[in-house]
Image (cartoon, rainbow, N blue to C red; front, side, top):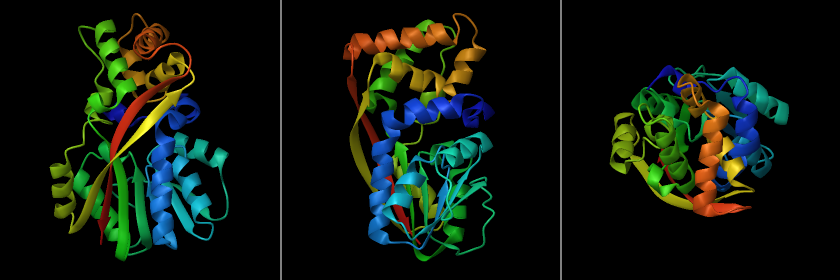
Length: 268
């Protein structure tokens, strides 16, 4: 995985939160919050919190629960804190593979669409298990294959036409590159988890225009860095071409597309 796959810097956090979060992340954040509410943990660790969509949902669902929200990228944490910063939420910069917390210090560990970015999945799971109390739950989600997620599939196919000699591969390689249920189970077993449940979850992605969907993907994620490093025709032109492809497939005005992910729960 290139180092740039984990870089959410510059204007990416603001665009990510404004366009990407409502486009694809909110329904899955609500799902994690519902699962947590049923478990009623007293102390939660969130890994790869991003701009805080799950953090906000969990805080609303569990008004008495302490939440420690972490991310590898300080700009994402800074943006999240600007959205919600209260006494029950502690924001920390932290590496999922070397968590700065004591053993058995959390009732639940959650991670929304971050496990795919772990350079060493087993090590990341092992760290989550280490900081969990006995009987605690590790809940995370991962995207299904790119073909099962309609907007991004159309956009990446179009970018392959824009850059035929060196097509960007960030979305296929990382966000949509870790969906094999057998591999997920095997990695969790290696990390010491024996009770694992994996459930598919389909949802609908909505955007007020094709331009909004294209900007979310092309400019609100590290895909932006891949586009920029390829030079001509440039970020804005590539985003416009992606928007044209989305509009051709889904029509003008408000659009809808299918999204699909897996929800994983492992119990210590």
